[in-house]
Length: 395
Length: 92
Image 1: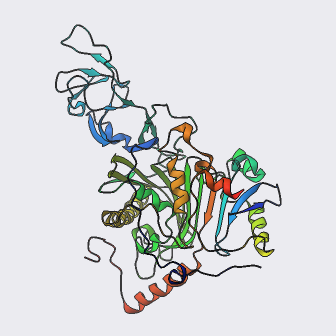
Image 2: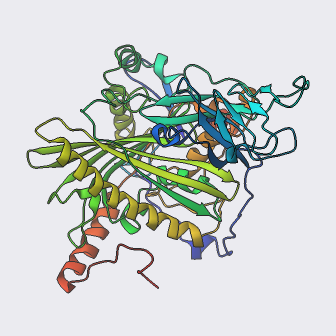
Image 3: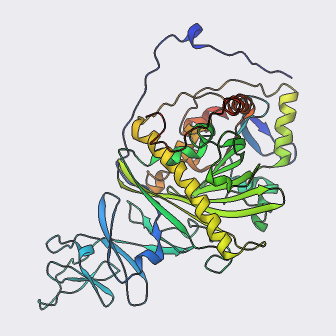
């Protein structure tokens, strides 16, 4: 066996200061399906305002219940359609009552003899999957390819699954690439989220970026994602389907009990330095778990996940964008993840093979686990419980 | 990264090892069709995890382990990867 374990230390060969290349935010918004939230929240008979993709859109349900998404600014005099009214199938502008259809065309100007030429505004194609509303964004204006879609959760919408418990965060001062970077970040699960990853593997292939993690909790701190199940193990198979929507199948296993949870982690960009982060959880209700118990577990899991997102946001608020991360052998494949992510920011014809070819990376967690076990044992011995709420910790 | 051919089907991939537990595999052909195990998994979708074709191919894993044992695949420290087309072009 030939193992070259010669390590190069900084002091021997590289004594230059490592400079951070902060780069710059992208100049366009990603091509792909973006989840804007739960469908039912947009079906209350009112128009909704959502700031996304550097603009403002109006979302409303027509008489058939179809959700429509249009640029909110009326092409007549710039009125905000999302402050208007739904009239029949159309959205009416509060300024002069111009009526716009879900296809982006102006259908009627009630005070005028005819609708002017070129009375067409930007419309986003919509899709509803698993009770969630998605819009297709493509700077080139192409329709969504049939093979780029969001997987359905079998049995969702029946009593097999609890209702989505859904939460929304506004993140300002950061580009949404920060959350995507977490896909490969094995070590932050310990330091930021108080989990112990035992096994960690990433696979990127086509428009999918997967993270397979087996983790346990810590003896010095208990988190909601452990579901109050002592000595539980978490089996998590998560993947981004496109640039912004991650669906995670989580099995929480303790003794003979296994709880299956689906966790959604998704975002949409407001601007290049702000985004809306959303997460939702639903718990599988079969296997001797009642609907009430499932809802209760979903709530507990959601609270745990909410804490985790707050912990991430606290990091992003203060960090810099970095194009040239300095990595150890135990870090995940940040550069390859970003190469995968790049496919959504170039024209389809400019996607290169390396962005979409399968890439696998299994992280060595041996040294990390050795170190973390000692740290946790020391905390337990000293009776130290790490603070979970990032706004209270390290103030 | 170093080229390793699967002992089972001959598919060439690029592999990097930072330690015995660590493995990094860059496919340079369409994984879903060039690996017979993956092709089978895709056809039948049972083994498909998360929309990628499968978690791993046991024949390829064995081929990588053998290459390490034979000294054909050295274990190295991490270097910053070349990004873009050059990654695949340089390595093969």
